[in-house]
Image 1 (cartoon, rainbow, N blue to C red):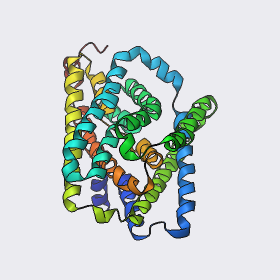
Image 2 (image 1 turned 90 degrees about the horizontal axis):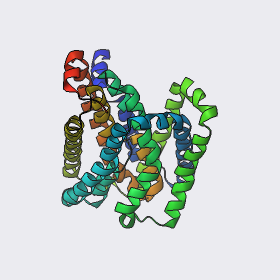
Image 3 (image 1 turned 45 degrees about the horizontal axis):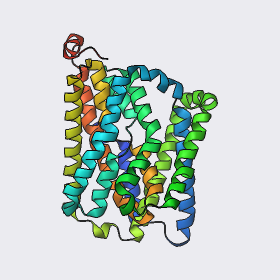
Length: 334
């Protein structure tokens, strides 16, 4: 059993299993009646505190220093906030007849999110890439994403998502304001958060589990699963795989064409091809009506697991490449 569990962990993130476990819990025991309001309040507070922590952990000084490598960071941002959204618009229209309007909207929302920080850096490190550049690129993506993602949602999904002035105010109060306060507190809290990564990580993950339970509880109250078919779920899985394959291929080809060194290219590939579930789930909880959040975040949850599995295999494969081959494969790096 231990050996089997180790093998499963090599392919499936145990945290993703917990997330889907919360989906199952919401399906069996959703928050209903008198429990709805307390769960909603707890979720709102958890989301606000999450974004406060995100702001407090990200160093603006580090980001400013990283601007020196502006070509690399500009390319990562172009993949994250230009190429991905364009693919999301195309995918949402092309797949709508099969996926239905809610899952198609979820595909688009997935494409508007910032990159991940932790896994992008981890995979870049395993592949012997430019870790410092990866940290800055992913951090810049997240710093800007607090503002850019809601703006992109307004631009591409505003009418369909039912976003109004109240939603914008809620976004500011629950996401942007806590993030700004966190940034202002970084000089006092940054070192503490760095020293206590494991404790903070557990809170992060616990808060996101609560977000998932709240979202899918609302979906169950609206008979969400009764609206989904097996064909839609299979089509969604295929769509996520195709999306990831296109972006990884694009990051590989374009970063090489621009003459980046191999270590820089690995940072671009991993930071430019991924989307953050840690940011995406709380954002969805704030932006979209409660009854639709569960379906809308399904593409993100599937894409997250697929990106981890694929990028883990790429990182392991590239870690075995001799240094002389990676030097020959790269360019000037600036």
